[in-house]
Length: 177
Image (cartoon, rainbow, N blue to C red):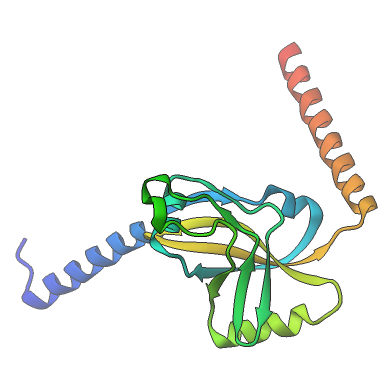
């Protein structure tokens, strides 16, 4: 079937749009902070870019990082990630980075202002949940969180155990049938 020039251009743009959608789903998770969901009530999450140097990027691509005990702080018009450990990249030798250096997170000004107003409320903090690569760029999933009390943690463990027992009972019943 013959298409006029205008229609062909439209189809090309539509095809290009479909390809770009596939690239948007290209996410490779490097590290997750599993303790964060156990220790904090997560109110909301936000994606932020992270300013890294070359050896840090190479080390992240190898999956050598840890978010344990890391946190973010708003100072002035910047958000800084503290205590995130990114191992040194061995082949870099003397050009390596400090593994626990503070790293700047890249957010829009209005996002920083909104987070600053929420963090100023009692009990809220910024916790990184994961570091991942999206379309080749390193990103941090940052959570606005409130600390859990010990009885909240015990309640969450109790609920999880009850769910496991119920699933186990259902599987055993299905085996008997």
